[in-house]
Image 1 (cartoon, one colour):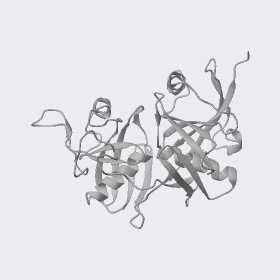
Image 2 (tube, one colour):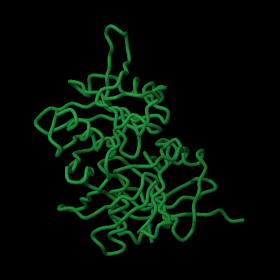
Image 3 (cartoon, helix red, strand yellow):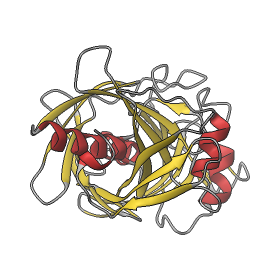
Image 4 (spheres, helix red, strand yellow):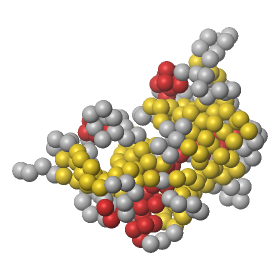
Length: 302
C-alpha cells in the first residue's frame, strides 16, 4: 500500500512556530511519538506546536486542535489562533472569524498593519481552582512558590493566571538574569500545578511596557507565547504595575495586549507569517518544501 503524503503550512506568530494541517475534508490523527519526531528541530520539520484545522461541531468557521512539540494536546495557543484566524479570513473573505478550541470559542479579526491579526481570548481565569492550583489561595496575584534556598530563593511568589492554559509569572528585574532553561522544567511540573504550567519571567521596564521570557510546558524556551503575553498583561494590571493596555516584548517581537474593562475580555494583536508550504510522507516522515513563504491559504489549507 502506498504511503500517504499530506501538505502542510509552516507558520509563525513572532517566531512561535507551527506546522498547520487542513483536516476538514480528510481527518488526520497522529500519535504523540510521530508529532514529537516531526517537531524535532534537528531531524524533523521543527515547531513549537502542531495545529490541525478541523470541522467545527458547533458550526463556526473551524475547530483548531493543538499539540505541543512533545505530542501532548493542549487547549489554547494565542499565536496559533492568530495564524489560523488569518488563514480562515483569507480563505472565506471575511474580516472576522470564529474558531472553536478546547478553551472555547475565540474570535479573530483583521487589525491595522500588514498581516496583523487580533484575537479575542475571552476573560482570564484567576481563581485558584480555575487555574487550577493544587491548593487554595485567596489571592493568586502572588502564590506561595519558590525555587532555591528558603532564606534566599532564586525565584518566588509568582502570579497565577489561566488564559486557556495555566501560567505562572515571576516578576524580576532582568528576564535574562535567570537560567529559565534550568528552572523552567522543574517549575512546569511542580505539584502545585496539577495540569502543569507555562513559566514566565517578566519585567516592567517602562510605563505599560513589559519584557517577557517564557518556558512553555511541553515545548521549552520559545520566541513567543501568546497566552503567556495575555496572562502577564492581566497579572500586571491586577497588581497595578501597568494599565489594562500594554505592549509585551518577547524575543520574537512585540504583542499588544488589552484587558478590556467593559467585558473582562483579553485582546491580543500581533504579526503572523507563512514561512513556507511543504508536504510530508506520513510513513517515512520525510518532508520537503513545495512553496515559498507568505503564500495564499489555497496552498495548504483548502
